[in-house]
Length: 89
Image (cartoon, rainbow, N blue to C red; front, side, top):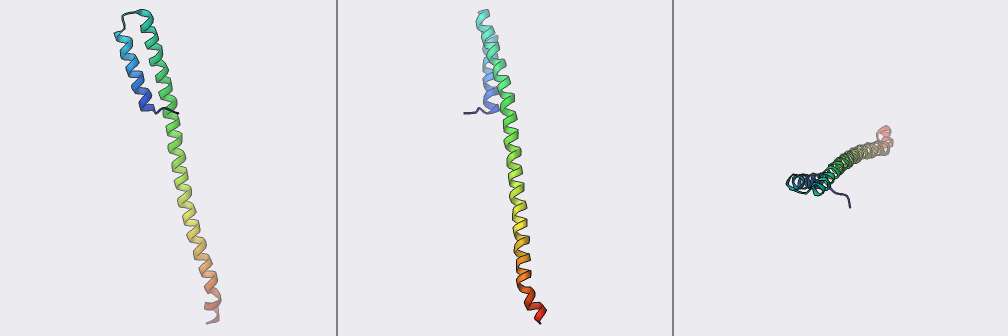
């Protein structure tokens, strides 16, 4: 399951705080590495979120355009169906 960028940033903050409070050098390095990894993951998650948001907008735009096309087609069909009646009068 993909993590949100907000979750990743929160984890980065937790590990960064842990790195500052650690007294053992090895534990500090591990916490810094974890904070850096969560930071990279946050960037990837933010990119994925932007792509999903863009794709949703495109889908909504396509739905609106399809609705307009359907209305135009229905109007054209109605006009074509009424054409014999108006030319006969």
